[in-house]
Image (tube, rainbow, N blue to C red; front, side, top):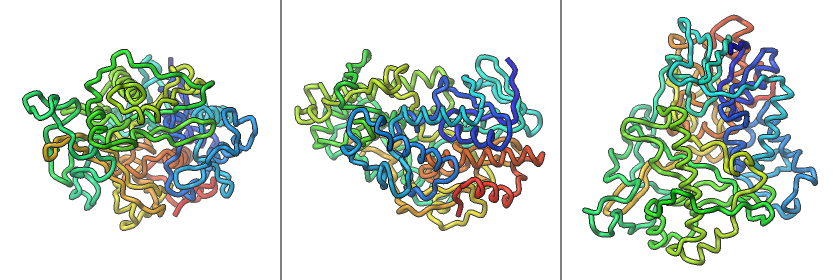
Length: 525
């Protein structure tokens, strides 16, 4: 099947949706390619309902429209099915969940978010097709321009402009665009929070956890998922990725709860570090129970042993980005089963004290979420994979205001954040490495347009609002879902201006771009 449009957006996550909507509103024909069978929104509609934002003043344009319409939804009495509106604690990530001062809702149920994305994309008249890029031959170029994308099923989509809104940056290799995977050294960009962290300060295991299968017996081998040494000194760069997890949506409402069963391939040895952490004194923070409306949670990683499947998204000669689609599905299933096994263990295993079991016993999967996926989120949280290398590389110095950004097309404000990347033996104990939480105290910074476009000598009609040009630690702040939505809209605006002027994305005049962004309500420095 051959298709054609002015703009192709690859990726159905939140930033892909805003990109597609903006391009359509600017009068261009748009095809949005959905790798998740038409389920729109990525992490925003896959359990990440406790929005990481830092400062809601960065919201503008379509992102602000989205969160405002969520707020309006929860003003309706019929939106409250499992609890009265007055019973909801209204706590969010640094701001009220449903904020009457701004009329924004940054805490919400996954199904409500997906329904709103579907409504907005339909109203915009965007054509949505389902499919996944052919990772080996999916980007077709002529000179420095992409002419078409090819999907696994053979569908070819021609366009003038392409936007890679995938979490993996899957268009970059085929487009001949430079990218990196892993952590830079602190030295490379004069940073302080990049590279190997040494023993992590937060989300750390308690002291005293023996690293060997048989306690005290090195000859018995190391526990699963454990490295014998850190593989570098503090500040060194490496190939490691911060851990992934599913943002679990759980509920304790009896009439909406599906009991979690023991996974078919449950392996007790995989939870030995959990048992030993409990023995060493960890009694809580096994995962968050951040409440969303209707007695549902956004349950994220929390503590030294939790939902993050540390070290399971890369190896010596592979990482998540190098896997094909089937391999990614298989690895995502392992993450799912690890997390379901974690809940089952905390609820039922005799090595878990009764006091802990009682805390987690009430929680199960909600019947009214992800009904066609066994009530489990569609998207694994790909916290980072490929990151483009372009003429501007966003670093922690930009995020902290130490370096200027001359051409901002959006703002970020969240903590410089990385989850742990590995577990290893430190002073005879099991320890985590990789956690960084360097607070910006809500101070916003600009994100450069040049970080969204490749070098001109590599590709002239591609924009990248997620896997943009940034270091590991700067990306740790930029990667938040509201920022993705902002940058998706800005990328689409630039794509449309490039079409109108018959020019490359690199040659779009910044002042013209800025004027249009401000006219559409975007917030810029």
